[in-house]
Amino acid sequence: ETYKLIAMSGSLRKKSFNTALLHSIIELAQEDFDIEVVSIELPLFNDDLIDPDEPEVVTALKQAVREADGLLIVTPEYNHSIPGVLKNAIDWLSLEPGTPLRDKPVMIAGASPGILGTARCQIHLRQVFATNRANVLPGNEIFITHCKEKIDDRGLHDENSINQIKKTLLEYRKWIEFWKRNAKN
Ligand code: FNR
Image (cartoon, rainbow, N blue to C red):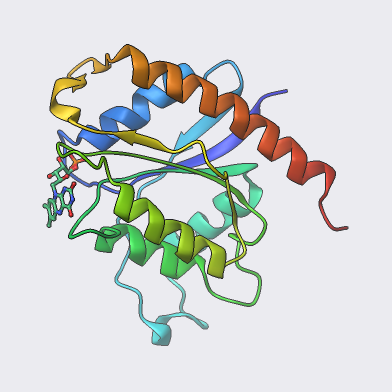
């Protein structure tokens, strides 16, 4: 069985290392997952827009996440935290009642030119997803440090990172299956 994932890159930049990493992950995952990349260029979150005028792009994104077996986030770290555009998308998705994030198995990865490879951003993301009762894959962290040496126009070419991603994708598959077995009816 292939599982359907919705994927988001936290960078809007054309030559983004993280978007390139996302596409390499999609290639490595193609046997087990069907991954659809969605745009996070949404209006700025504003509570006044929710009801009854929720932007159509937001309604569509919520629906896509709700129907998916999992959510894949590949993002840079900005100022030791989550890029605003990504946080904005999560805020839109987070609204109760019925947030599509609830119980959703989530996998996180990131690339940075520095030595921490988005570690601090990922800690914050875990906290934000926990608030929404999403199920972020425990352990199995994918930090691509020194990404300028590991990612180029053709994607990720660092063997250790590739092996780490392959292992993590296997764990993520099991994680999705675990939550399917334990789903509340
Ligand atoms: C950064 N960058 C960065 N890197 C990092 O490891 N920790 C950080 O806190 C920050 N902070 C930060 C803030 C802002 C506003 C920018 C624009 C950049 C550097 C960042 O990792 C680098 O620009 C990456 O190339 C961004 O990812 P993409 O766009 O290549 O995917």
